[in-house]
Image 1 (spheres, rainbow, N blue to C red):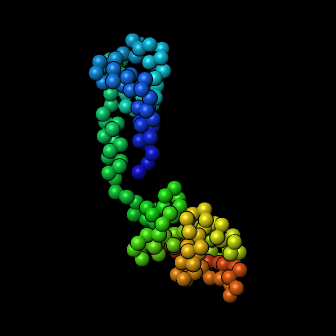
Image 2: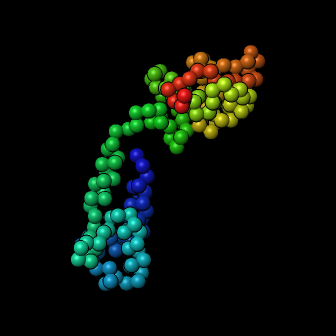
Image 3: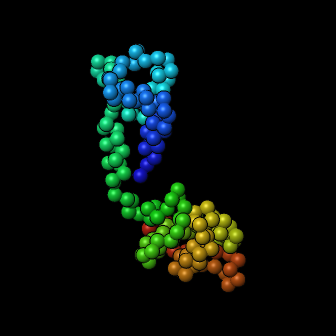
Length: 167
């Protein structure tokens, strides 16, 4: 879900804006009839789309804005590996093996270009930006055959093309 609901909540988080919103809902106010302070309070309500001017110049509440937010929340979740990421980070590994493998392939393609050797520290730092447990993720990439390493573990590189590579 996107964050468009935050603008609506922020607009209604102020008691003064709540009073202006209530007047619009109950009385159908004309903007010119509002005090300067109430016009200032009205601006975030208009920006959030919960108050709109009608053809006659009166202000009205926009219940369709709330309906749109609810419909957006009811949208099916993403189907790709992104559905397991929060803000682009993997906070915990998916339960199902196939989902874990999908996420590991996706993150491998994100942090390690094909045939680019990097040190263990570099790979771990890259993974730390994308995962709460970079060491376990690095191990999963090696165990899954996506990433190879030198015998001493000093250098890592990826040789397997995934469905997330642009090749």
